[in-house]
Length: 151
Image (cartoon, rainbow, N blue to C red; front, side, top):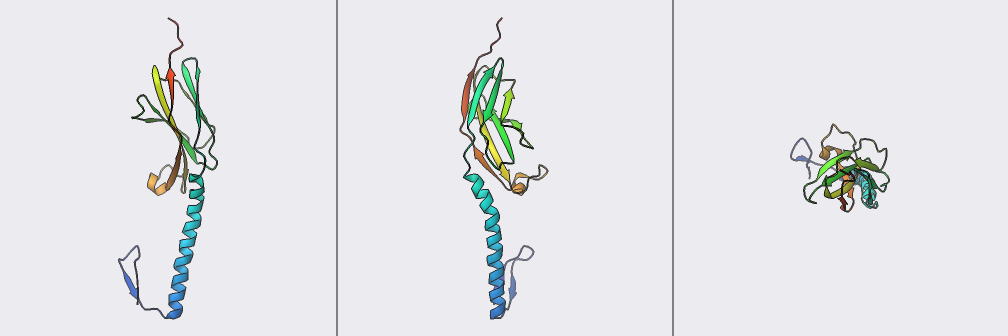
């Protein structure tokens, strides 16, 4: 007697002959192998190098650039004035580049971090858990901004 747990019912008890048990075991092993192969692509992504950020002041703006992470679906750029409370500045649905111009830096220290993201199901209408995403984070980089305006 073998008991199986399924999505629709808690347990199903079924009698299988020896051949049936072998077939059942093969089906379970094959389904596990397929899942492992799909996750292998995500595991490879998690071993990708983290984005490296550089910041350049251009007049009264900051250009935040980061290194490319191969096979990413998108990038997210977060900013903070205190290195604690972050908000997203840039969320790229389609990766077109690896920089962002912050036209509103605050006087003093600005903190930035980049998240490269890869999702199994890339659809912004789905929740993040349904998309099944992995993220590779950069280190936090700060820039002490002073306005270049002369009054």
